[in-house]
Length: 153
Length: 299
Image (tube, rainbow over all chains, first blue to last red; front, top):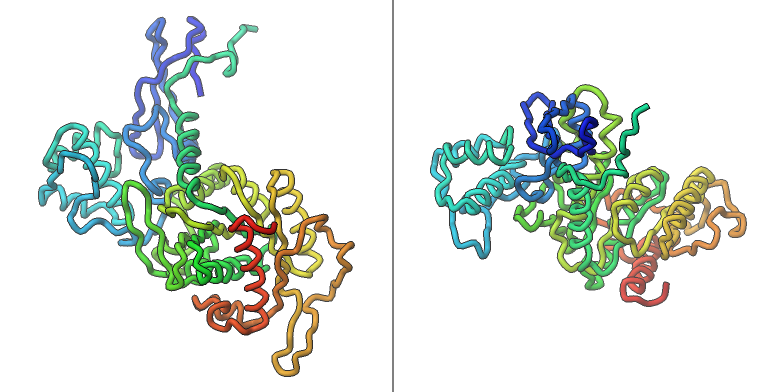
């Protein structure tokens, strides 16, 4: 998918993606020559068509997680089928920074269906480590969610 | 009319990165499968011919010979391999490297949609917009199958068996996502209708340049448990030269035995529970042939 600014005959660059949570999606592209911006708005069916490929417009903020498409797309996934490590932290061999989860953050994570909980926990922890953050609390979770585009997580 | 450059005219990337992500998916799948010595698809094109029962018994037979065996259930909408290999209710280890498969009592690593569903009798459903499922569902299910193959920590298996659902389109989808396939076993029966459909699958596999294709004729005869009389289950006996299978060789010929389905459905593949039954002996012959193939022997 490419957007062409006809006036400038210039291919527009991807700027940002917004997911309002109603199944629609907005992707903003900008012409590098005249700075004109356009937004591509997709309806829920079109959004689903793209997400069913397991890809994200504009690229990924976090690497694809194992069985991410299955976990995020299935209705009626079995609770507790994925074993979340007892320590409350996913394995991160070789990473020097350990991340401690406050009880409030753990409580918020408990609200996430266990079908995707391990995956979500890993995404938050990876983000914290990459940003040099050693404690995960609800405020940090909010920040991570915004930066990572983890709507609904 | 204005001259607008076409997609192909434009070499500049928009950073939407869709193509790059698809390529990355393919690379991840290839990396995951590369340590596996032999990839075998068990397919037919036709339903109800015993693909899953043969897959389960083949898996158990190979595992009992010391092979490291994995089995993935590509039938997302009608999964049965989990039950047949007795892993229903198993949990799956979750790590950044991949999801650990369930381990059957016979030592087979298993992945099946059945393991992920909360209710055994519930149809597979996706979180979906109210309209247009026909547009994206095939794409989504192909993606999920890719995850069943590429996101499961299979390790260095000797063989990964893939139980392919009915429909020649399902075979085609599988071949499109797999980087390579070592062997395709096509399960047929002496029914005229099945032969007709399996012939299509053979052609599809040949056009996809699958080097090793073998036929497994299931329910080829019935042995009376009382008197030992051998009879044909289907009234469409044909001379070998009349069969629509071309030069594809017969890898197995499995007699009908109601215990095969019953025992396997209960999670106790007959090949291990009654190894002296005629059907188990026939299955062992198939196991032998596949073992030779894994070891790089006779094709």
